[in-house]
Amino acid sequence: MKRVHVAAAVIRGDDDRVLIAKRAASQHQGGLWEFPGGKVEAGEQVRDALTRELHEELGIRVEAARPLIQVHHDYPDKQVLLDVWEVSAFSGEPHGAEGQPLAWASERELLDYEFPAANQPIVAAARLPDSYLITPDGLEPAELLRGVRAALAAGAKLIQLRAPNMFDPQYRDLAVDVQGLCAGKAQLMLKGPLEWLGDFPAAGWHLTAEQLRKYAPNGRPFPGQRWLAASCHGAEELALAARMGVDFVTLSPLQATQTHPEATPLGWEQAAQLLRESNIPAYLLGGVGPDDRERAWQIGAQGVAGIRAFWPQG
Image (cartoon, rainbow, N blue to C red; front, side, top):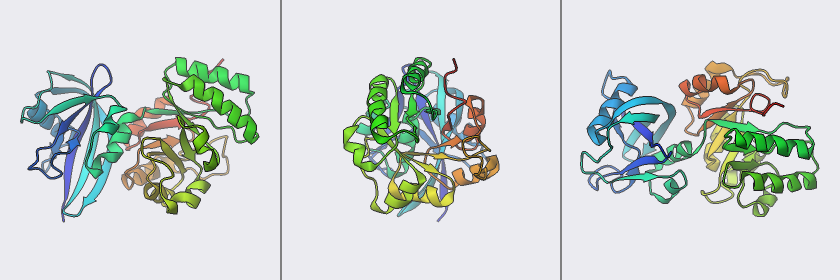
């Protein structure tokens, strides 16, 4: 069965809402919502196909777009490769040129719409920012809280509270304070025993590679509305993350780091290959900073994650 190559778009409006369209009942996966786009013709560049399809379907002209995620999915009757781009600027007023209903949805509202199975990683990618801040180890609680406040003021949207050398009660107390700071501003990801899940209902959970190996056979430990992430270092762990149904991963170490000097770096080429074989939004971690975002996008990553390069200075 030949895989159908489709160019699709996460189109953002001025208010950061995302444009979605409803598939006609007569189409494959009819009646469900989708991200607009269409087939890439033989010999056609993906960006060109996207521009053509969005003009035909919505009457808009793409002015700024970049790769977001690639998704391979096998339905019983069809195999697809969804080549998804984020469109951040366009001209014209979007309308259903083919009679299809349209809707503008906030990132949270996307969860209220029913999408084809192949679109689930796209929904996650559309809701995630392009950087993931991980807090440094070894800071006093007051210093860490000051840094989180500064990061939130600078626009951080996804923060992991990483404090491996703290005692459990100290970490839990700190998590309560950081969760309060992040409320309504950013998504907090916590690390720790899954027995703590019920105590922090607003937080997402970031699994260690060890936890991933232990719990993946049991499936996802909580419903899809709550963020679940995992630390991955290669193809085996990425496969376990997919089996568990995690929403996103960190892939590390991309390059040598002070934090884990003993780890063998993946390098950009191997990371690109791993991303091509995975459908999960992934942040590259290890020796990267904000300036590496563009390169990360080009090889299929959601963005970049880090500690020192992202932590507010001073």
